[in-house]
Length: 147
Image 1 (cartoon, rainbow, N blue to C red):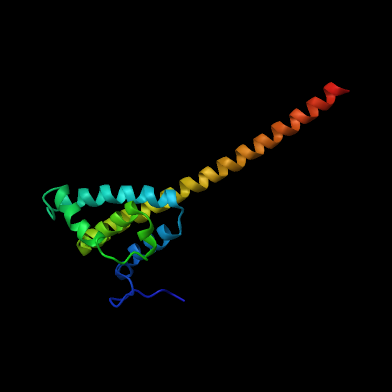
Image 2 (tube, rainbow, N blue to C red):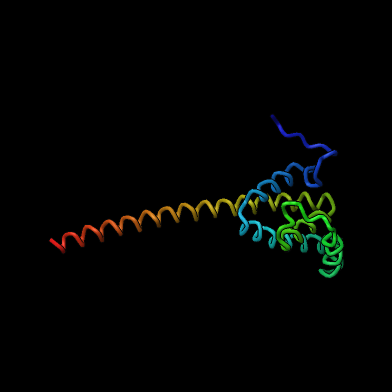
């Protein structure tokens, strides 16, 4: 069944299908990937907000974010890490148009990071395979020496 995105979304980020998808993928990714994406998000959001004259400087952005971080609700999936929570809070405070632009960038980052992780897994598999072959060669060489 096709997912529907309406203005009566359950979560604030479900109103934008790109953002919703990126957040879902981010939620399902490993902790290291989440932190990397969060750090990049903070940088991108800061740049966008200053470029768009939304805020005068980084201090204004941090002040706005601190208000949200004082919220006592801490049972959302992104509340488990301070960096991730800050990045998502900053994203939530962006104007809709900026949020959508950042959502597109975020989706690309998440996909790129997942591709890197998959490549690392493949490299790890190849490395394990090579290690196994070396072990087998070593074993057969030892047997020949013993004979």
